[in-house]
Structures are given as C-alpha cells and as structure tokens.
Length: 565
Image 1 (cartoon, rainbow, N blue to C red):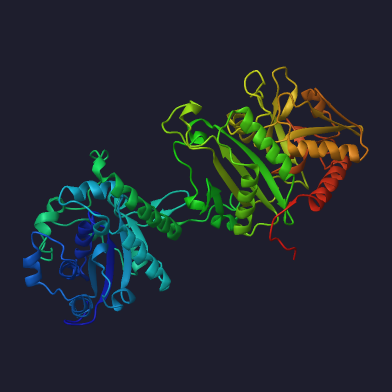
Image 2 (spheres, rainbow, N blue to C red; image 1 turned 180 degrees about the vertical axis):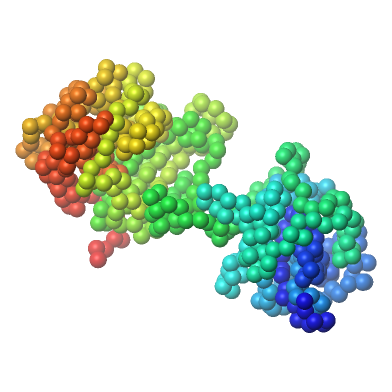
C-alpha cells in the first residue's frame, strides 16, 4: 500500500467505446492495491471538441476540464494505494495533452470487433469514425512501440470467454487477466473475477446513460453466441474501422506469436512481401477475396519457379505453360507476359531474394460478383499472386526418400487433363494423405490401367542396366523439370525412352529418382517397403544431378538490378 498522498504507479487502459472497458475497470477496482479513475480525460474532450452530450454542462461544471491539470494533478497526482488504474477511451486522447501522459506509467490496449461496437454504440448515440477511435488506437500503439514498449493488446471477446486463462492456439498465446497482470508486472488476484452489481462510487457522471448492462453484471459475462443484425446504414463505418481493427489484431498476434516448428517454417519467411493483384503486401496482409475463383472452386492456374544466383530458372518455359493453362480454362482479362514478369521481378527485389528461393506463381480467374461456379460472374479480371519464399529443395537429395503406392489413381484426360496446371489439387492431395499415413515422403500414383504415372508432387524416372525411362505424360503433368532432365539424359549420352512402365519395374529398378522444381532431382531409396538398388544414391542419378546443378548455375532469366557479390 502507498502512504496517504504518496506516489502511485499508473496503469493506463486505452480502449474503443463499448468494448467491456467498464467491466475491466470494475475488475481492477476489486484489487486491494488499486484505485481507479473513470475516463479522467473526458471533460477535456467535451470542452475542446464541443461534443454534445446530455450531461455535458454538469460534467464541465463539476470536473476538471483542463487537460494539463488532469494529467499532472489527477492522473499522476498522489494517491492512497500502490496502483492507479485509468480507463481511457482512445478518442479522448487529443492533441495538446502533456507528453508525460504517454511517457509515464504502464499502458495496454483493449479492442473489440467494430461489428459489435457499432451495433452497441448506435443504440445510445449515432457513431462516428473519430468517436470509435480505432485509428487513434493504432497511433497509440505505434507511439508506445517507438518509445521501446510493446503494450499488451486484449481482445474483449476472448477476455469474456474465460477471463482468467490465456487463450492458446498453434500460433498465438493471447493473454487475458492473468497474462495481462504478468505483462503489467503485478500479481494476479482472484478477486478481479467478481464484483457486486449496481453503480460504483467511482463511476463517471455518464454512467446512467452507458453502464446499464454493466451495472447488472457481477463479473465478465460470456459474449452472446448470436449477435443482433448489423444495421446496413453503418456499413461504411464498418469498412473504415475494420482496417484499423485488423491492424491491432495483427499487432496482438505479433506480440503473442509462438515460434512454429522449424520443420515447417524458415524464420526468414516470417516477414515476406507478397504480390497480390496489383500490389505488394506483408505476409499477414496478403489475402484474396472470398469471392475469388480460387476460393470458390480452385479455379486458378499456377507455376513453381526457382531462383539461382540472380536468375529465374526456366522462366520463359514456366510462363508458356501458365498462359497455356489459362487459355485452356478460357480465362479472360489475363495480364500480359511482361506484366507477370515485372510482378515477379519487383517482388523478388523487394524481398532481396536472389538465390535459393522458390516462387509460387498463381493466376486465378479473378473475383466474382456473386458466389457460384459460372465464369460469367467474373467481371474484374484475373488475380495474380507472386509468393516468394526462402526455400531450399524440399527433399533430402543426398540420401534419398521413400515412396508408397497410393490407391488414388491419377486423373484421366477423360476427366481433367493434367496438362492443365490447375489449382484443383485434390487428386494429388488424397494421394499425399496416403503417403503421410504410411510415413513415406510421397506417394506413387497409377493411371487407370495400373501403370505408373507420377508421384503426388513430381515426375518419376527409373534406371535399369544403365537405361533411363520415364512414363508417358498421358496422365501426368509434363513437367518443366521433367523436360529438362530428359534433355540432360540425352546430352549425357545415356539411353533413354518414354513409355508405359508397370509398378513392378520400379520395384526392381537399379535406381529411381523424381524430378520437380521444388525438390529438384531426388533419389528414391525405397518403394512400398522394397529397397531400390543398394539403398543408396546411384551413379546415373548422381551424374544427372551434377548436370542439372551446372545448368541451373549457367542459365536463367537475370533479375534486374542484381549484382553478383
């Protein structure tokens, strides 16, 4: 306890209105070491802005309305307890207030979805963008970060679901009361979870207008499962506010992010820049519309490209196939080849990616005016996505991988031609699930007659007595890497043929390897529990690997501005 009239440690809560801020104030008021102030900056706000409120004149006549005095004499004035909790509504933080308001004390932010805030606020008085204060909340957060702080951000709905325990997911650890107390450096007290119903002596003069529901409460009440309809008249305000709310949610996640297993995430990829549509966006902001065709029906085409030493390997060939696939699917309003190239180069340069990178290039049919299958609903042109990642080959190309044969058969051209490099990959994914369930790296897929087609992700080759063979591309994708390897085999003066190959031929082969942009050339050491050859990388595979490595070093489309170190 602080001595009578002694110095107190101030805790500032910055909130949007109708965000359970009063309940949180009541919660902190239950502590035996805490005194609270209810919106001490409100009178200054009314005086400066001239905002009309039913209680305006009475409040101004009975309360200190000079912002400088409020900060110095009330917020940071002497107190009776160790801590002072100040509830602030963000819009009340006006220019001209003393700098010490933000420099001193401990700060945290309380947010709530504007869908709920607007609906609730509108029941009392018409809302405005300034009154909601989402943009000001972002400014407050940024200012505190610039001062070296990383303030906690609390989501009011998560707080109400379970006030004491932090919310945990695969990626985030979102603090609620106990976690907030830890962040503020104060011990959690169980008394914070309950309070008596009715008005409180520290309530602001405006309480009868705004606190009716809170006065009926005795603790944090769980949010309603189903909210009331949203007024269409507030739709524009919702769009304005959501941008800033989503920024605050992003900040909340950044401070609460748990590291993902390194098996799945290269740390450098956490801060990617991605091309979507016609702009470059940060990773967490890179999104397409729910009306986009790729969401509505997997209606898109894609390519995977690799970057080696300042050059994009086989770029022209990949773009040929991208545009061929888009034409086969009758896409309209397709960006030009030069526009796609520029988007690739700009994205790589912005990320500083000039080597050991992979690009997932996607072209969707674009956004629809309404949900549905018909391309007639696509009136906005295609959506281009350039997703670059720092990504070494995804397989162990020095020791090899294991395969199993999937029961899922590769699509026939009678159904969906695999020569169209489309995004509807369920056929491959089902086979990959079988591979995962068998603890294999990938799965072999057969055609309708039982001959080998490819794996779920790559083309496949075998070597028998020095002869190299690969399946016809009747059912499989005629991959760019596949074609490159076929050329290399001929250049290396090896015997080669393209033909129908049965599964037993792969089981009894001397060597087997796969080929694909993401994994390059990968030895296969086991298929369906059978060891391939002697279980090691074979000499022919190594020879073609070396030739491929040399080719990637010597060829490719140069990235503008790149200068070799």
